[in-house]
Image (cartoon, rainbow, N blue to C red; front, side, top):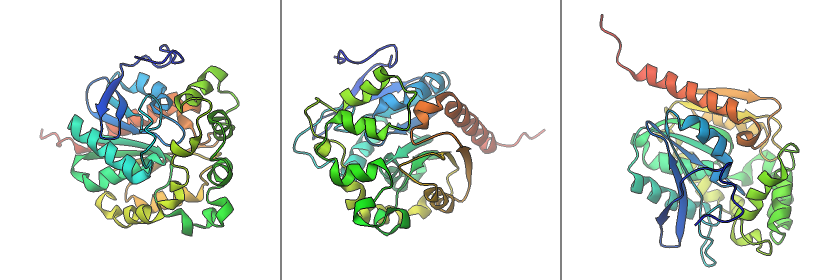
Length: 298
């Protein structure tokens, strides 16, 4: 049963659910062909990928989940919401779907969650597509030092002083850079986090973005398992949350990566530049497929 606030013209997908120990996890599975699996960050959900899915599902199988606490998934009261726990849930979904030759698309704190799976199962991976993200310990990084500024900009304030604000305040702060996003679209992010009186503390695993530093560091140390997977990085240069220095880390992470800069793009390229992003992803997947085809023996 879809909630009455959901605009099914904007989000015209069939809802599917995987029953986990902690609750039901919602996901969508659209189209056929090579799978493209999309992992969201905070405080978004699969709705963020809707315009990419409308384009890419014409030629590919597009899967996007809502982590517990987000979107149309359950929001259990007594669950940890730590990134490692989200990563375990994501792995259960991948096992349930039995996917191979995956193009993994990650964004924001969806990167450590998605890449944790890739590191454990590199044999299932074909390509990695990344939008503004990180997956190393934030506590040592120069841009994220000092207790009051683990992340620059609105998310920094959110981490330390906004854990008790309404979901509407949170969304307006994080999406503040996107003045051109219509209010009805913004409302899809507000409503998906729960009731207006709900506090974000139990939903968005805010403190864990830094608190999970040890786990992030473990992933970073295991990066060799996926360093040779072809990667496409799409980077919004006007991101107020994750600064451009993070991009250099990713260039060092992957042995073969293509970087596309969006000079006027911010943290949420999926909202601001959906058609361009979809086109770059489609071209990248096609080109990598060509490289792996056996040479013509004429």
